[in-house]
Amino acid sequence: MGKRLREPYMNLSLRTFALLFALILIHGCTGKDDTSTSQQNAEGNAISQEEDLIVTTLNNVANAESQFSKTKDSRSILRFYTQDYAGVKDGKSQTVKDQETYLAEVLARINSDEPIGILSRVMNIKASVAGTVGWATYEYEYKVVRSGVLQRLSQGLCTAIFRKEGGSWLIRHEHCSTASPTPFFLTPR
Image 1 (cartoon, one colour):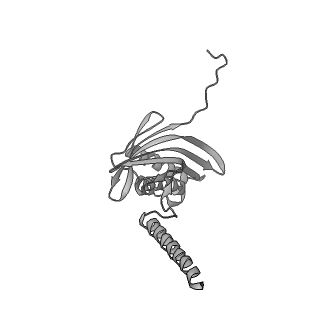
Image 2 (cartoon, helix red, strand yellow):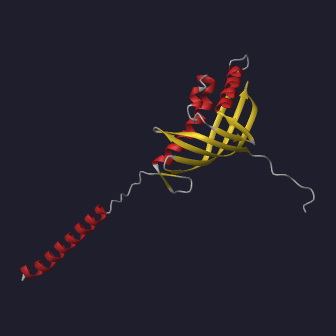
Image 3 (cartoon, one colour):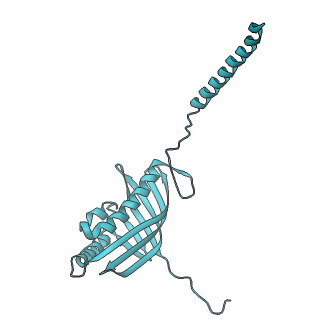
């Protein structure tokens, strides 16, 4: 009698084991993992490796600008731009030559009796890629400090177009606008 009671339970245990084994195999064969290794943007959407490289490029440019008073190397910034770069800043055209001129002026001030410091950062970067062309929208903040006093603050929005050259994403075009206060009208119409 004891043998008859064990057989149904033994079959149940084998069936349960087989079912669990099948579920483990099915889960393993889906290719999905419980831990996600992809980056996510501010909205929580996954971003590709190439989009992440564009985000990294923008952060590296901001870091190079912030370190410029220490490195005194304009190439540390210019290396992120294509040779045929053409940009727009508050309605004015810019080229690589214009960037070089600006950095030379900044370097002269850094080397003066009252050196300046720069704090540059980018935020809320949204990058996209199609082949060897990429683009990003982002917010920027650029501060110039002299003797511990804020001399210049520039904040705004940018759209940048990138071209992949070798393994690097370089800025081909950038259009930035400085944020200005909302106009206040005394008599709305």
